[in-house]
Length: 609
Image 1 (cartoon, rainbow, N blue to C red):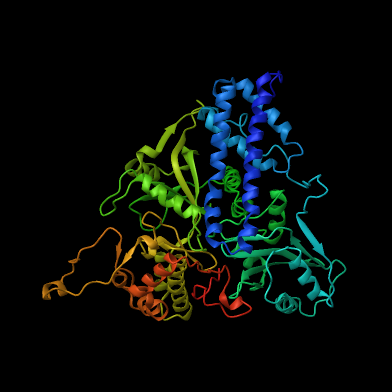
Image 2: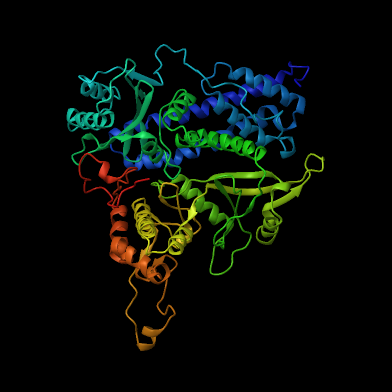
């Protein structure tokens, strides 16, 4: 029920202060995203990476600023619950005609939950469901850039239209040969269209802002012909002489899913109306959850909000129980899942057995490192939550005992509402998309029988992808630390992704060494490490015994990735990164490129998922 009084003098002022805090946040977020265009034009790759890291911190900084202001000016924590009802109603009024209402709601939730006690986190005080529609939001500013532009070519002027579309991006750097590149795009498009008749509504729709990430800019749109729609993206890169070129053309939902993968860094996009961008992108990738699209656009907090709403909806319409996740148990993380839900839940154990030598704070620091780093399609993104409540009846007794045994400080069981229904409250957890652990995938290949071509092919692909994943992380200045198969997963598209971060290090912080020659015959036959080892020393030639015990796995690995056992591979890439070189790691297979990869590219078997 609405409160009877709406005239508490401070309620509107508090709501206005909260909206001012959000508007400041989005203004700074958008300005930093817009500057990505200049960094791309000037090839400021280190600045681009730094901005991508720093922008992730913007949201929490603005929330803290707003909380401090509300405490200082209004003593917000001392206000009555009736006043907080009124604050929310006034805030809803301020969202009418707002261009980012869904983001403003999430900001309100973040500030409110920092001020109120957890027992007051009810629907009446935060936005559990959206209060304002994001459909058909348009700017009233006549000079505002539209969300997308529409072009109406014919077969005869398709080439000129592609040139015009790229020129409308207004990149302040010359192309090597834009007509040549447009010809490649038209040729690829005509191969997709074939001899199909162009219908009356034949058009090309293109999002007005480019998508910037690392060393690339991506033009994203779709071709519409009759009832058919063909999503596409054009990667724009710097050529060897510094001029621009269109490197490839990506077609279809699967290609776009790769580009917007959960294992990649967030894009920088100048968006006035983010919900309109998400709506357009959903038309290209209808299977992609809106939560993941918001996250891919750098709006991670909105992604978390939508993910949690989707999760609550799934709980309402499912009956299975949370359980200990299948696979080899880790020494640092306790992992559980809900079989019907495609994610896993990870919490840090209270104690770690030897030889693990780390702390909870250090593990959290590793996960933050991955969040802020370029994940190059090889490290799963994580959603981090605190004080998450689950229905007790949905937890298996075995899982409850597992948490009590290994992470009792992270779990509380309570009857918060006093109605006899217990809740399991987890103090801190990470949520990741579920993948098949690579060791389980390989075992399935063995169980099928390597005499069968499909099993042999699947094993070859998995081992090749495993090495490619490591090499892509090396290109991003990441040493995974624990390279055991169980710490990697394989996605539904066959992509191998790393997901165990407690031993991750910057490559440039590692000291890659050869095993010294034995001092005597006893050293040579000893199964123990007899040479001195520093805290950051790594001996690549020792990887083999731990990873390649199976003959078929060893054969496939040595055929594609024998260089990973050579110290020179690691040392050479470390030295190039220290010298300031930034590798290219493409979100598409190298075979898709219009020309051979340049010498500045990091050569793997391609990024095909």
